[in-house]
Image 1 (cartoon, helix red, strand yellow):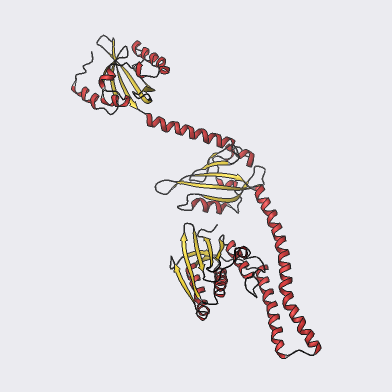
Image 2 (image 1 turned 120 degrees about the vertical axis):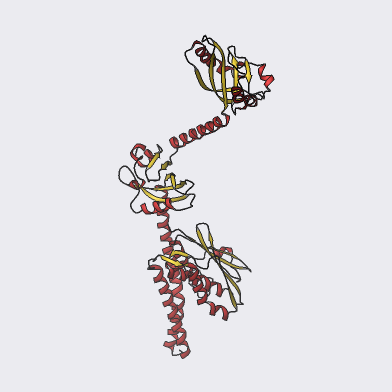
Length: 472
């Protein structure tokens, strides 16, 4: 019989971090260690009164008996299996059992040595992973969106089956090839810059992807870059959706809006030019009657000047200069504009308060166009405050955007009129055309930004300009 009293064995047995036991050939516990008692929730005395079979799940006993029989017959010397034990509290505990047989000098089986390691946490993680894999399989198989994984070298490692219905390719046609092989050449740089953007959690981009028959499909893809602890790209996860129909609908809507805008412009031009022409016509009638006074000539000249101003603004809108993007110090541009209009502010008893989060901040933009926007907005704020007051000019950085704010203390603008600012020939000023703000909205839009206006009667107006730091 095994010398269980051996001190080395006893210490190893007693202080092992995993459950250990000596079991007789009938399945009775002969000796158990503290780790096993803790695993099953019994005291040593309680466990020695039980058998291995009584703490095993009934549905697993037949398998256990087959392995035990092979051990006794000498077909195997040890076996390892994952099985569940019944805890004293009634729930199942997953464990990895390693069972070896002990034989006497005549090679007769005497007992078993069992090592029982708790793997409940591991099994729980495995089960969760299996469920996630099942959900992923369902999504990737039945979703119309394309799910992709791209490696750090830019090659596809996984493409979901839905790619067949969207782009006409089998997944095997794409896996192993570079993502740029399937993207329109004009959109490759956009895709690369988006993927390589540092510290970005996710991006949604729109680009054109090649169909198997050669034409291009508009795709909208949400990209998540997965990086290691050193910031190096491990994988790029993407969910892509076919938005060709949406793009076509947007084009139709845009064309319709252009026609509507053309009608509005035509009506606005007729209205704006008719007013000074009516006055000029009246003065010519006075000239014909001989009643024209010399003072009226100045008025006629002013009306001609107004017509010229309207035509010049229309020409700027009709043929805007192409934006010339370069790294500009946006804070310096803002300060230059404030300094330019400082004299007008002082004459109107208005104080310009600056609050720049950064004294200098470089941004890729068209400096002249940006100054044009700042001047339009700041002049409107000054003209809204005939009784003086303060205008707060702010510059802050918010995540991926830079925000410029102009807050005045003017009379405010009614909500229904705020919505119309930027429309052609809508102006809150007596002799305004509204073309300046219309142009400002267009410039900010061309820079990938947003110009928003919020106003409250009696308190003033806030104009916010949000521009992306990373140009797309």
